[in-house]
Image 1 (tube, rainbow, N blue to C red):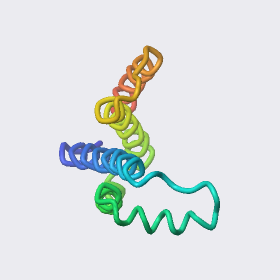
Image 2 (image 1 turned 180 degrees about the vertical axis):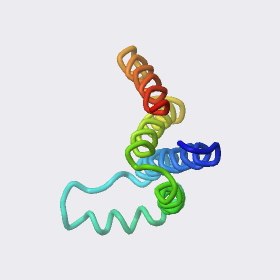
Image 3 (image 1 turned 60 degrees about the vertical axis):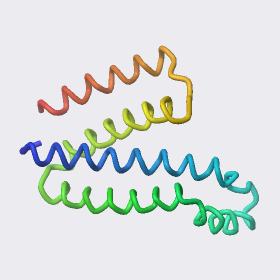
Length: 125
């Protein structure tokens, strides 16, 4: 990444995407999920639009897309995309453990450490 501003935008974008995923999960849990049958999916989606967490998640994804476009206009995709995915994965995993009390076992912690090392390697290239 070429500037501190690009790094800030990338971390902000990853946080928006991670936040959107966590908000979607919260909205789905509050709204009872989506039906398994195709005819009920549309009704389920319409029901989710009444869930504030889900709606804020949609807004967060739209904002993340706008920030991502700004990053893509200035940085090489071969560098910024792996960093975005890595940071987003890291944030979602930590958020899932924190907000939803999802288990964070040894394998996940080791995997997250590998991702952090990967971020450091990619950012130096």
